[in-house]
Image 1 (spheres, rainbow, N blue to C red):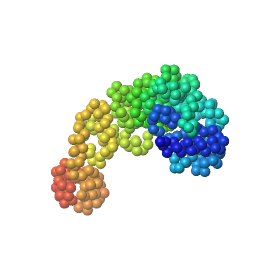
Image 2 (cartoon, protein in one colour; image 1 turned 60 degrees about the vertical axis):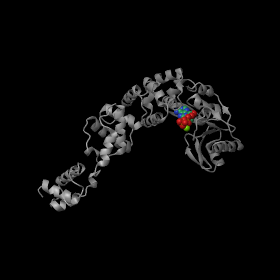
Image 3 (cartoon, rainbow, N blue to C red; image 1 turned 45 degrees about the vertical axis):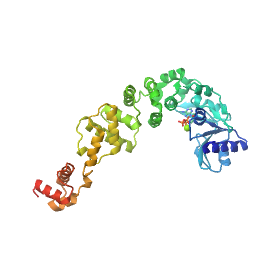
Image 4 (cartoon, helix red, strand yellow; image 1 turned 120 degrees about the vertical axis):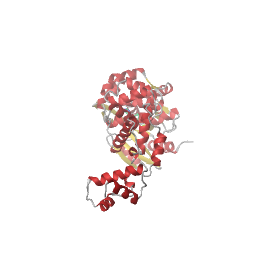
Length: 386
Ligand code: ATP
Ligand code: MG
């Protein structure tokens, strides 16, 4: 039984062939198919130029003119159909000059690793110009052509090598690995966004632990010292972490927010909160007050981080029990607000209002009084001789 995603890809190949063109599935899909790994993304390569692909498939949109890619929708499945191309004259070790080509072989030669250079026809036969099947069998990651040249052209490929180690638990071929070490300094040409994307993919893949020793040793992260430091720590006592936890570890070691990657607003806020909680936890000054307006996500991360640091001064369940036992969880839950205080105490806007609210909050969360307007006002009257 073929998956619908594969059936529809075959339909695209047939349609292109019926129109006189060649077309193959290529890249990650044939690799994963040979390995028996389920994959939900099929790239197609063809000698039809984009305008022809668009003519043949009415249900399409142009994804990238520069890369000659048309996204074709077939029975609600989407496929990237890319015209054979060659790449040359890489500028800044990352962006190639791309040219349409008429031969499948030249399209294959531009691909990064032999395991990613297999093609598959509509009968699911594998076309293997680079000995990729053998490398899959031997579980090795080897560049198509000279590794030194290929990494010099596009430095991102070095990160991709580690990504495939993390995904497949393959080994990097010796010559390929030597070339990574030699070209590691070119990582400075890769944008921080791309490095972040690759790191996320690596960390989320099942065999990141296998990639870790060489990822550190190769020095491809030497432009990212804080992250490298955190990864070295992780290497010594491995635990699966995501990007946020890794950056929290780097932040903890640095003593301020790790800014080596471009952070979204949400990520930054989360890291700041985690760092704040971590400081409270390590200084043993975690209190009921720290639990107000608790950010549960950041709280969970800070405990994971403490675990990673073998620094469990507090028991998470005890702290959570305390949190759930608090009569109110935020100053906004108080039975009185600033307006009430203004009226009762006949004071204008002044810092005193805030101070009184804070005092009321302390009394309530320490259960010295109930969260009840009358009780709060009476207590404040006593303390502030109203
Ligand atoms: P995944 O399963 O993680 O998506 P993939 O092999 O499909 O892996 P993609 O990033 O989706 O990886 O790229 C698709 C294909 O494009 C690759 O298999 C490879 O043939 C080619 N490719 C991608 N990036 C590069 C690159 N920087 N240099 C050369 N070829 C590349
Ligand atoms: Mg892919």
